[in-house]
Structure formats: structure tokens, C-alpha cells
Image 1: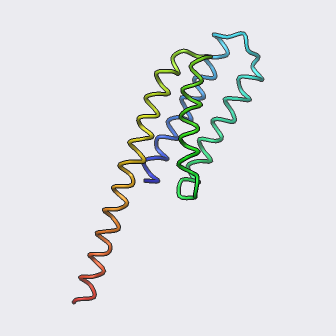
Image 2 (image 1 turned 90 degrees about the horizontal axis):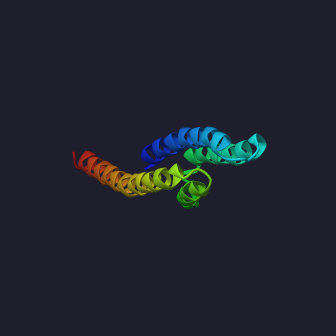
Image 3 (image 1 turned 135 degrees about the horizontal axis):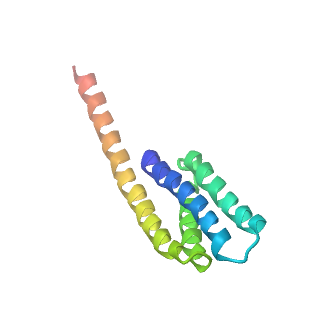
Length: 117
């Protein structure tokens, strides 16, 4: 799960950065305001890459997805991109867990067959 989720978060890091550039051009918000919010979101996306296996890591990832969708109120394209990344986040969590379960089963089978030999 960690690899898939981290890949999604790295993609979000870049999208947030580009959205910050767009927000500076499209809105009358100051550069300090735009980059304060964008910078915190970018740092959170990177920090979450290391927190995925800790309790609450996936839930913080969901909070980031909601924030990306809400960014659509400043940069309308983010409504679409936020939904796309929320779908990618769901798929990363869902299929990542299935992969982790399969790996655990294979490891258990390998260990059992090693003990039988």
C-alpha cells in the first residue's frame, strides 16, 4: 500500500505546486497567502509519504484529498483534479491493501512449505 499511496502523494505535490502558480495569476491573493497555503499542502503531501504506515496516515491523506477538492474554489480546475486524485487515493489504498494481504499470504505459504521440507 505504501508504494501506491506514496506515488499518488508525489503526484499531488506537483499538482499543488502548479495550482499555486495558477492561483497567483488568476486571483488577487497575495503571493505570501498563496504560497503559505500551497507550501503547507506540499509539505503535508511529502510528510504523508513517510506516515502512511502509522495510525492516522491514511486518514490524513483523505483530509488532503478533501482540501484539494476545496481548492477548486480558488482555482476551478482543482475541482476536477481533486476528484481525480481522490479516486487515485482510494484506488491506492484499496488495491495496496489487497497487495499487502497477498504478500502476507505468500510469505506465510513459503514459510509453511519451508517448515515442511
